[in-house]
View 1: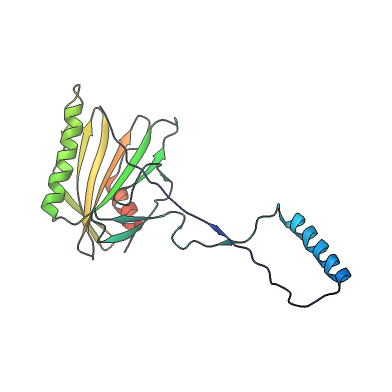
View 2 (view 1 turned 120 degrees about the vertical axis):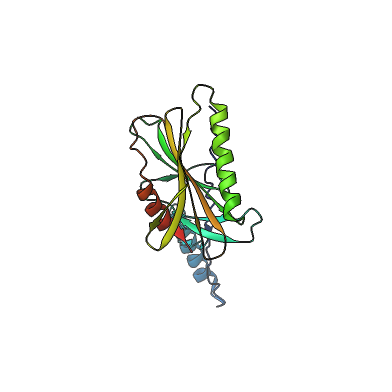
Length: 210
C-alpha cells in the first residue's frame, strides 16, 4: 500500500548585521596609524565570534502557518508535544510525526485548513480513506461511523478506520473564521500505542492558534 506523506518545511532566515561609527576627527598621522592598527586587531579578535542575530519574527520554533488552498485565510498551528516536524510540507498541509521505539514505526499527523462546508470535508476524507483501502489488495479494512466529541470548548467530528492492521482517524472541527480544520492521524508500523480519539482531540485543540 502506497502512502504519501506531505511534511513540514520550516524556512527561517537570520540576518547578521554589523556597523561601526565613523570618527570624523582629524588626527595626527601617528594617532591615526595607532587607531587603525587597534581596529585591525579588534577585527581579528571578533572575526571568529558569533555576532548578535536580528530576530526573525516569522520564524518561531514549533509554530507553523496553515492556510486555505487559495491563501485567503491563515491560522497558526503549534507542534504537538512529543512530535517533530516532517521535512516535506507547505502552508496548505502541515504534518508532524512521532517515531516509535523501533525507529521505523511512527504516528503521523496531517492537517489542512478547508474553506468548504462540512459535507464536502466529509466526502474528501472518505474518498482518501477509500483510496488507501483500494491500494491495498490484501485487506479491505474497516471504516467506523461518524461520531462527535468535545475537547474543552471545541466540538470535533470523527471516524476511525483500519487498513492492513494499521489504524487511523479522520477528525475535523469548525473554526471561528468560518473554515474547517481537517486532520488525519495514523499509526504506521507496529509496536505503537493505540490511538485514543479523546487524547487526539485534546492534542489537536491545543495546537490550534486562532
